[in-house]
Image 1 (tube, rainbow, N blue to C red):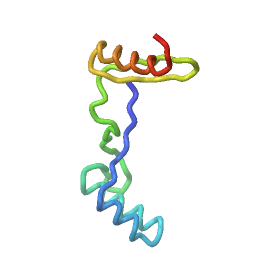
Image 2 (cartoon, rainbow, N blue to C red):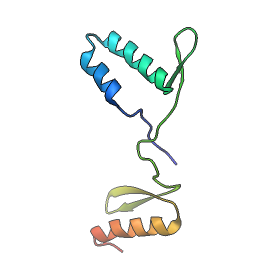
Image 3 (cartoon, rainbow, N blue to C red):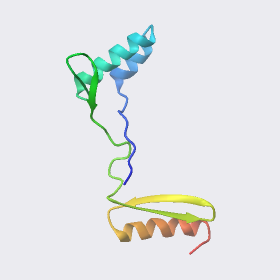
Length: 98
């Protein structure tokens, strides 16, 4: 199941963005802040060697289903087939399909 991942913003990162005077300074400060939080891992040469992915949509469900209504594609997530069926039916009902 594909997931999108991104580091969430916080007050520290927002402050860095607002106070940086150059792109390089902002990059250096953001890397330091993310590394301190454990979101980035650097090797001894300063290269980024890994990062901790954080899901944008937590608890989206373990199962997914993609379906089409008219010419639109929809992908729904749920913990079981009954949840998938209910979400699909709600979307189909909005379009007048069964």
